[in-house]
Each structure stands twice: as structure tokens, then as C-alpha cells.
Length: 85
Image 1 (cartoon, rainbow, N blue to C red):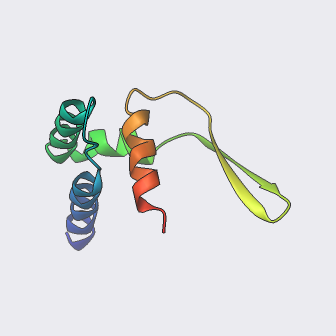
Image 2 (tube, rainbow, N blue to C red; image 1 turned 45 degrees about the vertical axis):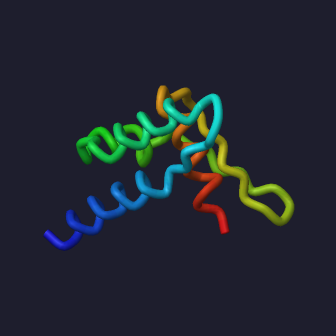
């Protein structure tokens, strides 16, 4: 039960972290944020967690290559850009 609550909180936290750019795409980003907040957890896992990925070790860094296209990939990359420290 605790693990489910933590996973649900992760989904909500990511949705709240999704940036809303001002200007041309503001309404679209706002709709995507609302969609992600109301998303079922199973769909969230399919869209953002279970992504086929190839790990390549080159020199001193690890490269992640996404191997398939996802209709929610734009949101995924916006989340990645926000969550980088």
C-alpha cells in the first residue's frame, strides 16, 4: 500500500513539475499538464516508465537511446529537461 502511494505521488509530482511555457504553446502545455494530473497510473507507467531504451557506454559517459516513438514523448522530454539538476 505504501509503494502504491509513493508511485501515485511520483506521478502527481511529475505532473506538477511539467513547465507551462508562455506564449504560443501555453494552452497546449496547460492541457497536457491537466491530462497528466488526471491520468490513470497504468497509463502513466506505459507512457513514461516502460520506454524501450538502449544504454551505451562511451568514454566517460552513459548514453540513453530511446528506441521507439511515443505520442507523449514531447511531455517526456520536457519533464527530463526540468528534472535535470
